[in-house]
Image 1 (tube, rainbow, N blue to C red):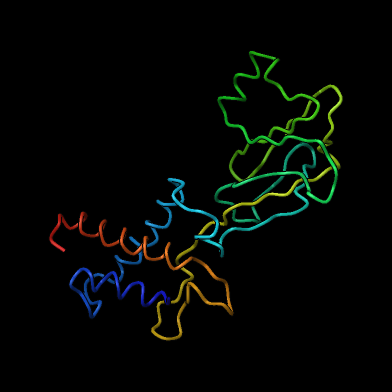
Image 2: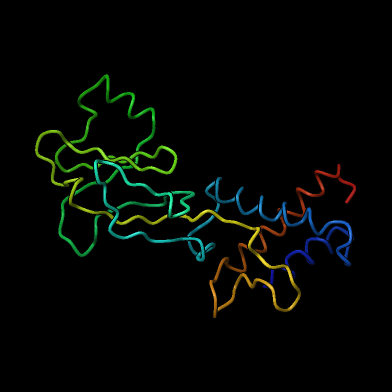
Amino acid sequence: MLYYDVLADICSQLGDPDMDLYQERAKDHFARAISGFIEAGQFTPDDIPGYVKLKTNLGFTAGVYDAKGLKLWKILAIYPNPSVAMDVTVTVIGPSELSMMGMNTDLRPQNSDVFLYRVGSSIYGLTSSDSPVFTLASDTLHMQYIEDIDASVWDDTATTGTDFQSTTATYYFSFAFTRRCISQAVQTLKQEDGGRA
């Protein structure tokens, strides 16, 4: 389905088949629908295959990995390299867990633990101070993540624009997910217009 067809569908459902009134707003609402479903966890990686990426050899020089170049939006999973035998448990933690570790040493990483936390575009690693199985300076992990979605690069030209399900380019979204986002965009546009659309 072309981006143009998505916008035409949204506009048509709002009584604007020529896309004179709603085209630009439809772009914004469609992009917001995508972001909203992802932020709410209402998706599977199969819904957004073009934006689910794998970073191999995720290394933690000086205990930190700089993820700026990845356009990292959301971490889906981090795990040891499956081709390397390593008895390690990787856990992504948040600020509250970090805070509690300062007060309770039992919550700190054990020898087979790797705790990771994100601050901006940096991912920090914590291992046991005793005899860690995983060495931050030399061992690596794999990370499955969602790349930030930049709707401004999509081409809305009829017949030749961005095809969300192209098999020759990046298959961005499933048809089912695209339809859900179209429906959501129509609903939010109607709400924005006070139900008049």
